[in-house]
Amino acid sequence: MSKIFEDERSLFQKSINDACKFEGVQPLIDDLIKLELLKEGEKSDRMLPLAELYSLLGPGKFAEVVELMNGRSVQFPTSESFKETVMIAIYYYYRFFKGKEWKDIDQLFETEEISHVKMGIRVNFLHQFIQKQTSLLESRRGK
Image 1: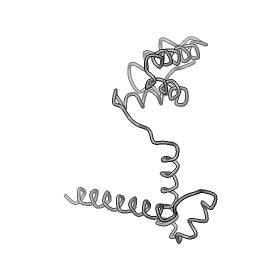
Image 2: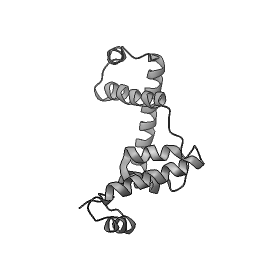
Image 3: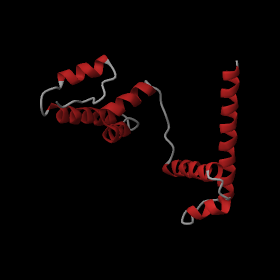
Image 4: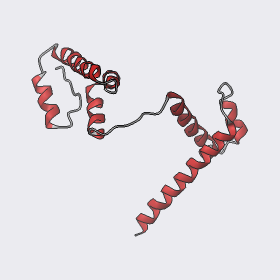
């Protein structure tokens, strides 16, 4: 049986799946949802990325995002900013989990144009944040 929502998380999602239980209906409904989002995108450029996000995530994950955001606005990071976030996580992993030296970690990213000093500072800020959060959790557990 074809379903719009693979993992029904609400009565609404179950009722949608029940209404679309006939073979071949799901792809048509999926396309109609995309078209409705594109139509809303014509009214406001801010709405247009939602159609693209829906296409990437599919109805189930998109519904989770909508439920999480519940009408609130969010500004996504730039691709460059997200790339830096990923690199910070990798640097942190090699530095604090594997005990690698900075120069050895830098060699992993030879092709990237990054400031290794800036990366070290950002990794240390992440480490301080993690230590602070760990201390907060430990103090809450101690109460």
